[in-house]
Length: 443
Image 1: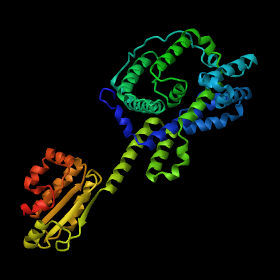
Image 2: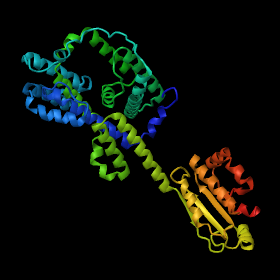
Image 3: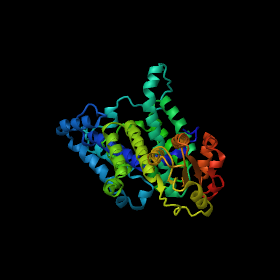
Image 4: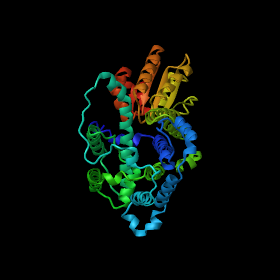
């Protein structure tokens, strides 16, 4: 995406799609933390939302009181951290202190029934991961992974670029979209070769970074070095961290990720946008991100096409004698040679797919006496291949009926497209006029 300069395409992702899957991600993250937050006795957490709800229902009787207390205290610390720490809160993140406090309480009161990182993941060791390269790559494996890989890449790119946009707004900066994608792509290639998961910029973490004073890429470098030190020298301490505390941190992160105000303002939005948002949100929660992004973008595209079609029109200008034609020379010509056998149409709006077929409805209005048709395209700022196709069909219909067809007031972009497609040559240069009055010179 970076090589092909696709960073700017982030602005073409509809807002309802972005907020829909972002809020869906937030809800999914939140729900998946309930096992560790409440200390439920569950072997695995199902990735399917309906099945996960069933698992929680069947395991609700296994709630661990100590686990909820530690998780609740950690959650309250993060919520009220500014009130507790005062000015210190600008320099010490709430999540960091919550982890320290939760770990201390579990150790001090000897809460052995509270699950920790070391208790669940016994094989975590200090040091750097080994470099590994997959040796069993075949076409079938690649084909099965192309779809999910594309979805993950799209999600990661959108989330990262949105994080950059948020940071721009907070510090008054301007990020380079393609540079962001290039850096993220290279990082993720080497991440997986070292056993890591695909990484993405996070809005919540980015906002916290900026609030803590981060303004340049140095903040990201410091973050990376800190994680490196933890991996090499502080892993024994990391093994003591209660899982319920980490769950509390992720619950707060999930809350910050979701744009929950959209739910309260959904009635104020257009129905089409509300539909896209709700559908994307539900698909993200019930199924997965790939399906949600694909369906959301496709649906939003269709709705956009419908809106463009509604804005476009091919209108017949009422013609009573020559009252609607104010051009003097053309009026005289029509009165002398054409009488009432003229039709004047105004095409308005983008002449693209979804709207161009309206031109074919004109065929139903052409009577046997019609000898001259004028198409005014002053308000047509754009035309695509579909518009070119229908215009060519209309030209051929007029020729078969021996009707003179003129196109006038053609704008720069449509003129360029029609010239390249050969439509101007097909119609003939004399039938492309700057305005309606100049048609008199031809007829």
